[in-house]
Image (cartoon, rainbow over all chains, first blue to last red; front, side, top):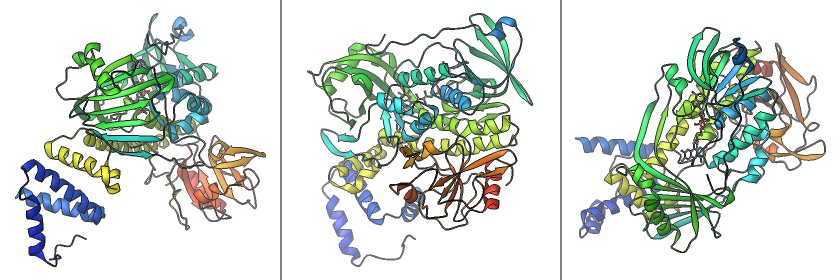
Length: 64
Length: 538
Ligand SMILES: Cc1cc2nc3c(=O)[nH]c(=O)nc-3n(C[C@H](O)[C@H](O)[C@H](O)COP(=O)(O)OP(=O)(O)OC[C@H]3O[C@@H](n4cnc5c(N)ncnc54)[C@H](O)[C@@H]3O)c2cc1C
């Protein structure tokens, strides 16, 4: 089951790390990084059902 | 003319029925002498059905076509008499390399599972395969192989099909109880029954070249994504017999096929890839566009479609011939029972159920490989490249790289012919699964489990049976094979693969699929499963 409750202990710290990592990148480099990040995290999660749930959710959000 | 191969020309012979103008009724007529039709004729003969095989041409497959044959079709050809010969003639490879951009991303060793008679796969030119199958057809009393016989018309009634056949001597009619249409992706028979062929045609074009290499080159499969010598595209190199190498160049969507094929355009590509100093000669060049599609139904009255006529897949993952041969393996024993009046005609419909299920799995696997190799938009390409980049340093990304997956037999999980497990079993051999091979000892000699199975149904019992050596339903008999007296499992591999503790019983179909299994020998349960597997009870 996809966890949609707050789950990150230090939300501000996480967000800063993410944004800082992309601050100086071109759009193409950001896309490359994001793709790798998704793949790395997906592997960590590993559960296809959870991943499918997350993909469906994100796709729906993107459409709005 | 190829440098390494001369195409045979088979003789056209005017048949007696055409000469005499007498319409004859045949139990089975097969249309199309490609790998699938030839296999169908041999399997019919093996099961005792006289088969007429019609082909509009008079030679074997011309051009660069199938290369890679997987274990299951090899096992089927072994049953039909040429598995070992094909393996001896073919090339086996184990090391694969994946390149991305300028670098080797990673290499892998297939390390196939030990203790199978047939290898995980071989590479062999399609014309060698067909030549071998033709030789076996010619040697068989039950196969009537007729070259330069083109089917040009079809009519059907409830109990027969009437084919109009054109030969150099004109047009004549033949009647058949059943027709197996194996006339390839551009099937005329499909048009004659008015069926569509729906699916996806991929826009990318591929240049396929066969070259004869003068020097030694390692027997490995190399796949390049975005190489320096062919930027933005993919390239595949692998070995066939006689030092002939298959090279696939992705050309993209806008390539002009005629232009791409010209030697002045092909040779520089090959030189850039193989190195200026590598000596090679061009054997054959063609340009293909690939498609993934299938017929909605494989049975149209008395006409049963198989192979590329019924379903077409892109060649990534080498599934076309591999899966077509398994159509035949599934169909022929059912035809035999129905022709002999031992099973109801509805058994034939299970061919369609089971093989459409398999075709869909193959179509999905091919479409997935094609999508990885030829990303369809900018972001798919970013993901694809991210996978390849990560694969250079991280193991986790390697399973995501998809340059074609090895074809394996599809389990018929939900087939109505299966008797689902009631007893407790571990392991892979659930009802509906293709039987795994294993080394056994028979009559004091080393042999293989699949070879020890009978032509029809078999009941394999681990240990020995208290009473009776066959189970019968009507006239359908399934002999018992005891893993103790009939075959001996010296190595223990068979027992392990089948979770075969003493007393375990397997009912195995003529196409070597598990129909049912039990912990004890209960003649009633076995007979019920046999009835169900032959379409007589549900
Ligand atoms: C580049 C490439 C690579 C491939 N690689 C692989 C691979 O590695 N492994 C794999 O398994 N598959 C591979 N395939 C697919 C494989 O070649 C086909 O799946 C296979 O040939 C299908 O066999 P078939 O007998 O169904 O049809 P075909 O081989 O097309 O044979 C059909 C036959 O029917 C005859 N015919 C047609 N119309 C009539 C008519 N009206 N009357 C009488 N006869 C007729 C034709 O002359 C022909 O002989 C590859 C294909 C391509 C193009």
